[in-house]
Length: 106
Image 1 (cartoon, rainbow, N blue to C red):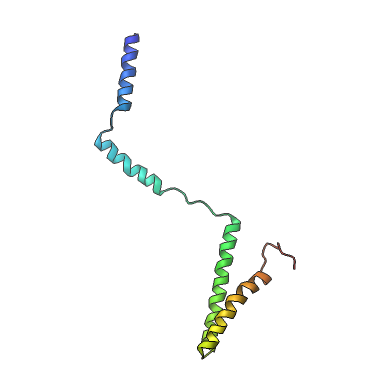
Image 2: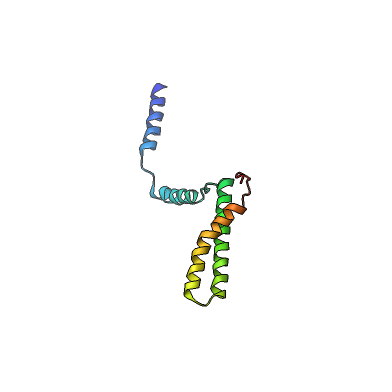
């Protein structure tokens, strides 16, 4: 009886050590690749989402203000002055006016 168990254990070890057949390896590789590509992206926190939204809103206001300045002015000096002023003022105005979390007491 112990010889049978020893033989079975030796067969199991040999199966574990034996290289897989080419067909089995070829079918396993695409499955692993598919699983790797289906990994979930890490979810952003609510704070990160608010920060990204705020950045997009600031960028939108900045573009809109520059478009208005570009249409209303004729000289490039005035356009550059408007670009400089909006680059400074738009983020400042958003920071002063918009505080959705109520963290800053002015």
